[in-house]
Amino acid sequence: MSQSDTVQRILDAAEVLFAQKGFAETSLRAITSRAGVNLAAVNYHFGSKEALIQAVFERYLTPFCQALDAKLEELEAETRNGGDVPLEKLFTVASRLALGSHGDEPRRAMIFFRLSGQAYSQPQDHLRAWLRDHYGPVFRRFLALLRRAVPDVPPMELFWRVHFSLGAVIFTLSGMESLQAISKKDFNQSVTAAHITQQLLPFVVGGIVGAGPARERQA
Amino acid sequence: MSQSDTVQRILDAAEVLFAQKGFAETSLRAITSRAGVNLAAVNYHFGSKEALIQAVFERYLTPFCQALDAKLEELEAETRNGGDVPLEKLFTVASRLALGSHGDEPRRAMIFFRLSGQAYSQPQDHLRAWLRDHYGPVFRRFLALLRRAVPDVPPMELFWRVHFSLGAVIFTLSGMESLQAISKKDFNQSVTAAHITQQLLPFVVGGIVGAGPARERQA
DNA sequence: AGACGTTTTAAACTAGCGTTTGAGCCACCA
DNA sequence: TGGTGGCTCAAACGCTAGTTTAAAACGTCT
Image 1 (cartoon, rainbow over the protein chains, first blue to last red):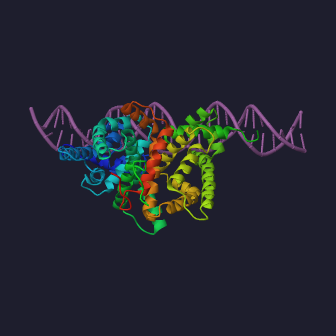
Image 2 (image 1 turned 180 degrees about the vertical axis):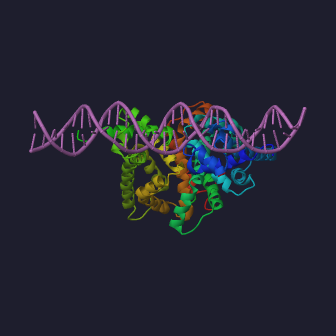
Image 3 (image 1 turned 90 degrees about the horizontal axis):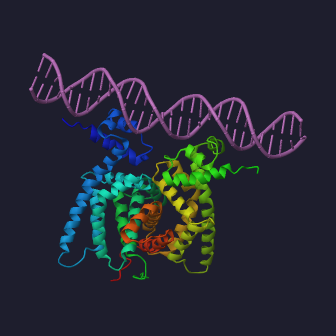
């Protein structure tokens, strides 16, 4: 092979370890050891640990965002001659792509949500900035469709509610394992990741629509 | 003074720095330097960096949980002779206590939410376990009142939705600064922390009630 | 005043980090 | 065949981390 698979092995190992223990707590030695490659390979192939972190995000996010963008394009076309995309459909599409656009099991997605959580709680400005610059457009496109789906919600409130939703998703899927443990203890019942994401939908939709004066609750 | 204020100065500095840069990225040297105390003071008074982290959480959470517990007791008593506490009131009470039970400005609360976010994305099992063991009861008490407020939502769904809400709150308040910046850029309008927490309420209430078959949305 | 327990101090220690180096390996092409 | 370029490797570098040490300073009692 002209391109060795060292790069992929490093990315695989880094992805798991970063999600498991965070960026700062994961040493290059731990990564290269798990990947079965030499310590210097990271700096040789990526340049620095920082660049490796970005590469991990890029490998996951780029296919996802491309898929989402294409799907949004499709949805936009459908509504070109009147009608809006329903709220539920927008989130179902996004969730399905996030969980399954990588061929492999949703475990990959779970790992990635942990990474996102770490990226957000991290003070590394440039990571957040890089994410925003690279994947902001598709986010705004999603937001535009959303705005049409819930015209009653003022744009700024909608903006915040989307971020609240993002928080609910990332936080939950970040802490999945411990939450599953608690749930099992309290309800004597195992819960799958698919089950949780299924529960997320009505919560997010309910939250986006909101409990304001625009809506009355049923008794 | 028989007990020097070194301990307090260290806690103050650690609280801010941990929230700003995370646990791993904050060195004891940075903390002691900001506190104006000697490097060895941390290990002398707390034993280790790990113990210092716990102490930071304890100093904030203990008064909050005591206040919340007392308030919940009060609410339970009110409903002893019939009636339930409305959903909105439960969250308003919790939010008001979280933001203002420390006398000082809500900035303290903001700092603490960042800490919570870091604690959750952190893989430090023992921190999470310690939080659960110490503050689990008051959480369960809150959950019990909640269950009575929304009897239509099945207990397990409610459990998950509460965690979704927690995620929305912690995530948002963790990333406040960057979110405020984005908001300012997109809407040309500054947003205060109070404004955001105000927006959180209808989102959380809407999410908890959910968008399931139990409720219809208004056109 | 002097002795004693507590706290502070400066300095050192050990360990682990990200990164760099330069020699070695190996496939490929002239 | 001999060299050339991409890649791997063990070793070392410089640095910063948390922690420990032992002496100095302090406050408080007899």
